[in-house]
Image 1: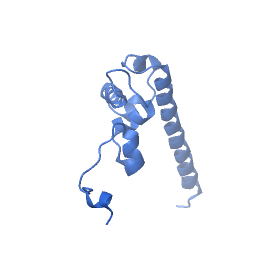
Image 2 (image 1 turned 60 degrees about the horizontal axis):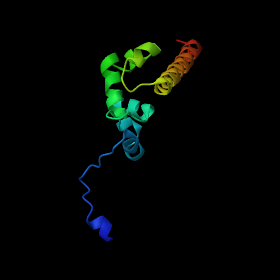
Image 3 (image 1 turned 135 degrees about the vertical axis):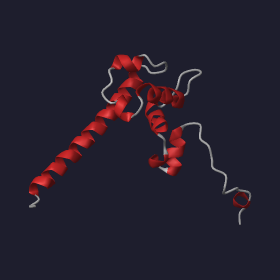
Length: 116
């Protein structure tokens, strides 16, 4: 066995400075809601990481559902969120909304086509 592998503690779970590393190695489904938002937010500001900003967003609005449809002004009240980060969040939530709309349309079509 190579030396690198024999010294490796397989039970030790690695930690990442940014959730993007966790997502890359373990998959997006393993991230918390705050970690997913931190990936979208991308970077923090001096003294406040992207994850801390994401935690503030979740704390302020309660959930993804609470975040959806909020005004830019509400996001601007959160320290660390500027226009670009707010645009990223708004775009991500609009994409999610469109995905749900597409799924609902497909579901409705299937219901109409079914003979019950």
